[in-house]
Structure formats: C-alpha cells, structure tokens
Image (cartoon, rainbow, N blue to C red; front, side, top):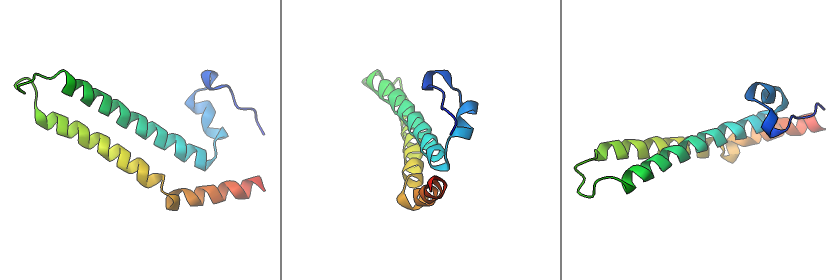
Length: 97
C-alpha cells in the first residue's frame, strides 16, 4: 500500500488515487459543508452589522444566502445517508479482504 503524504504536503491531485470511493464521498461532503459554513458565517456578519432600522440591507439577500446554505447542507445530508454510503462501504470491504 503506498504511503500517504502528510496532510500539509499533499494537494488534491496527489490525494485522489489514494482515496477509496467512500473516502472521496466523505471529503466531497466535508467540502460542501465547509462552503455552507462560510455562507452562514457571512450571513451572520451581515445580520450582526446591518443597520438596525433595516434601511441599509436587502432582506431578500439574507434569505438567498440562507437558502444557499440550506441547499448545501441538505445535499450533504442526503449524500451521507446510509442508503447512499452503504454501496461505497461494501466496495471497500471487498478490497480489504
């Protein structure tokens, strides 16, 4: 089995051939959740520092940002469902035997 490079010294192109389909799926969803986290962080800051009377902000923008984050999280939850992950786990079991 090839040795994996340390996390600080590897890039995505080095990582791909070393990952199983399950590990790849998990990394994809971690990336999706990270993007949702960033959107929510921006939304939080916008809400915290918006004008109290609401004249300086467009509520529709906040709703759009929340919807983007909700969509990213929803996709990750669906893809991490046991029905989606189980076939990837079975593939890993076959390779380790």
